[in-house]
Length: 231
Image 1: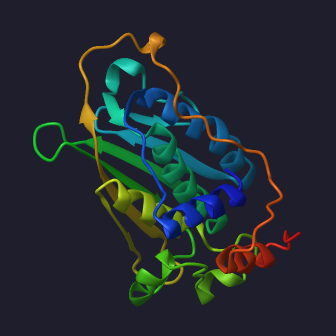
Image 2: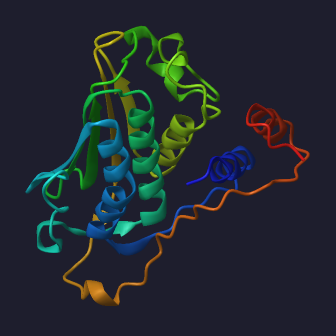
């Protein structure tokens, strides 16, 4: 997803116009998208990418994502869930130079009926007291500046906004600089009965187009200037 999509979402959140969809979706397609986008990028950096569910562990260097029979059919906003996952993994990929990125998913069907997702990496990490700063608008830590000057620091802010809008929570943990990071979020989602997944309408398309935006909003201008895209 382009950074402008994040900007558009931030404006909707700022204006109270952000909405979440609620449709049955195929979780397999969500994970397949993650595989298609990030597996080649991780491989090019020599980083191992693993997707792990409560029923299956998949090392993407040698296998494919879990099969449909091993994943629940959930009801929610698949597009926003993808957006959250992509922003978290993209963040880990930026700040991980070697080692592993692991995406773990578990659905608590018997109790809270929520999706629990953990993204773990062996990247630069951060001081524990800096955890909350990661989710602030344009927030960047000193420990990561030498590794990454790209982006405008909205990815994790969008993650927090979407997750909390959906009734969930998100947190970040690290034992310190150079010791990797753990990002955890929960998102309440209902399961639906047995469905023919081949007939599900795909509500989860995420545009990759880079857009040029004309806007007078001060927040937009601040962000766009940071990316040198103001027109």
